[in-house]
Structures are given as structure tokens and as C-alpha cells.
Length: 497
Ligand SMILES: Nc1ncnc2c1ncn2[C@@H]1O[C@H](COP(=O)(O)OP(=O)(O)OP(=O)(O)O)[C@@H](O)[C@H]1O
Ligand SMILES: [Mg+2]
Image (cartoon, rainbow, N blue to C red):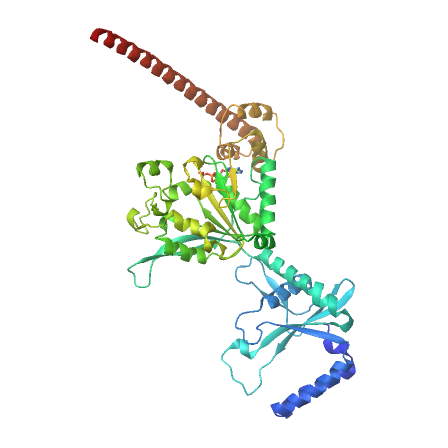
């Protein structure tokens, strides 16, 4: 253990001992003056500076973030130096956190400068009885260093400790997946929607996501730029948020991409089921509860809000988007709402995407997914609202190679060339390809899987050819029909004449 008294020298150590003895004998006011006097003497001889980081800074009932960052930094980097440690699992963390026990100390070196840290505890005065445990024992970390290094230690070193501590805590944090559920309120006569969470454990990453390599790199760069963009967004006067629209046929990896984004950024995911939100007020409440560094997801947006071209046509002149009422597509018996009382409007949703409310929370990503981009209203997906439109398309040979590597651990195979040619002729989703690559038996599994896939590709090819032939023949029939009807009309006209 590194003792501060050893460092301060025997003379100053003795002074401190005398002070603590006097503290028990004299009344407070007298003690205050004696303290002041001794402090002045100490300051003359003391070559060290001390900075105290309290767990609960005076008057505060919330744990200091700086204290937590220091604790994480020291617990992760220097636990081998301390002899007595505390172990705990912080709420929402995925691993055991170690911290020094009281009065343990460790040394750190920064740019050749030696500093000492000690965890300290101040005990309550014996005549004070408190019901609050925090008021009884006040813990703090004390940083000591030579006066000559004040500038480096209070500047770059402390920034280094805090940012390192925060990023370790961020890495150790367990991500959460939230979804909105409807529950009876306290009186049991009304439903209210609230977020419920589970630990987010989706294994998808950008490594396992099969898509065009350049497109993937672009998305990753865009996400990195976004997370580092706090100052930039402030400078251009825009809320710190970014919208992504993922569109493409079923099974092309839209949901998989969202999971990869969340794992890449270590963000929580809020999966919003719009159809079970009662109205705009409830939507606002839910949005306000979303934490920072989160991805808000609305899957199948075309089904969540009735904003398709077809509906607009049916509604005649009702083009005012603000009046379009959200309605349920999937019947959710559990929450008991019907179309009439589900009143989330498009304008309500847009308000949270880029209206005044969009700036609440900060560092937020919004993702919409759809199978039918052409059905979405332009207002919802225009650039600025949905900044990046990403098409997730059918499997191509490049995509297949990533899947083959993920599922079978092969980067080349004799069947690859045949598969490459088949991919040029047909549309098949990565989900269908992946299904065929799943190992069916331990023996000869790679060859077997390739065979399965080739069979599936041939089947898809003949289906496509059949469809084309049917289309052609129905077109031919229509043409013959129209020729006959024209001839009939000519004959009819002649008969009339
Ligand atoms: N691009 C891809 N990369 C890796 N795996 C994929 C990809 N696309 C699909 N898969 C696999 O197929 C399954 C279904 O994919 P996913 O749910 O992401 O499709 P989707 O585009 O969201 O479909 P839907 O439009 O029906 O919601 C996933 O579990 C994953 O295993
Ligand atoms: Mg999906």
C-alpha cells in the first residue's frame, strides 16, 4: 500500500496526527481556527497538491459521475497493485467491477510524472445520528502529486482518467432492448403504454452482415461520424440525431442490420410498436423516456401509419397529412384498442423526428424499415428526416461469400462458380440462402449444404422462368382478345351502316 503520510515526510505526518487528536478534544469553533493555522504551516512545507473526488459531493444525493469514472479507471488498470479490493456488479453492467478498499492506494505514471491515488473515508462525528447511510460514511478518492506538475495533472491527466473511465464503463455496460407495452393504469380503467426492457443479446455484427463491402464501409463511417459529431451538429444548429431508412424485400437483412448497428455503437434499442400507441400525447411521453445513445426503431413503417398512396387516393381530397389518422393493421387483442381510438398522426410522428421535440435526449438514431418504399409518403422519408436511404437487396455472389464464411467457414469451394452464375439469373433473399447453408449433418456438411443451395437456386430459376412464360402467354392472350374485340367493333359498325 502506498501511504500518503510516508510521502509527505515524517514532520508533516506528525502534524496531521496532532491535528486529529486535537479534533477530539476542542470544541468546533476553536478547532476551526487551529485547523486554519496548521493548514497555513502545512501549505508552506507541503510539496504536494491533493485533489479530492467525493462520491456524493456536498448537498448531492446522486453519485458523482467523476467519482465513478475515477473508480472504474483505477479498478480496471491498477487492481493488481492494491492488496484489498471490493468486488461488485454495477446495475446494467456485464462484468464484475473491482475497486480499491478504503485506505488502499495505488501509483500511476503519466508522461513520466508519478501520481498517487488513495481511497479515503470520512467517518461521522460520534454525536451525530443519521438514518442515511451516505451521510454516515463519505468516501472519496484523493489524488496527490508534486506541486510542480499541477498543470499537466489537472489538465491532460485528469481528462485522460475521466475519458478512459467513461469508455471502460461504456464497454462493460449491457445493452438493452426496449419495447412499448400497454398496461392497465393504477385504477384499472385505462390503458397506458410504457417501455419494458430485456438484455439485448443479438449476435449480429457488421462482420457477419452480408452486403456489398463498400456500402457496408460507408454505413460504418457514417455511424462513426455521427457519434463524433456533437460539436458539428451544434455548429450547424441541428439536433444531434440521424435517420436511416432501410428498405428492401423480406429476408434481406434489415432487422439484422439494426442489430449490427446497435452492437457497433453499443447503443440501446427502442423498438417502437406504433400501432399500440394510443395518441400523440402518449407518443411524446414514450419519446421523452428514451435514453441518450439509443436507436429508435419503427419496423414496417408502411404498416404502422396509414400513409400509403392507395389510402390517399381512397380519401379523395384529404391530402392534409396532419389529419391522417394512424390505424392498426395488426389486431392486438391484448391492448384492446381499435382503429378509431388509435390517434397517432403522421404530424405527431414527424414532430419527434425533426420537430421541436427531436432535440430532446440527443445522440439518437432513428431507423425505419419497409418492404415497400414506393408506398411511403415523401414527407416522412425526405432527406433531413431520413438522412440515409439504404437498400437491402437480394443476394448476390459477394453477399453469398460472406454468408458461406459465416455459416460454413469456407472462402472457396468447387461449387462457387456454378453458384455465381445462378445468382446472376435469379432473385433470392440472403435469408433463403442462409437457410440452405445451415449444417444439416456433421458428415460432408459443406458439400451437402452447397448441393442444397444449388438445388434451391435451380428451383427459384425454374419458378422465375415459369412466371415469365405465364406473363408472356397472358400478354399474348390479351393481345388476341383485343384484336378480336376490335374486329367485332368494325363488324358491328358496318352492320349499323
Ligand atoms: N444481409 C444479411 N446478412 C446476414 N444474414 C442475413 C442477411 N439477410 C438476412 N439474413 C438472415 O436471414 C434472417 C432474416 O433476416 P432479417 O430479419 O434481417 O430480414 P428483414 O430484411 O428484416 O426481413 P423482413 O422485411 O421480413 O422484416 C436473419 O436472421 C439472418 O440470419
Ligand atoms: Mg425485419
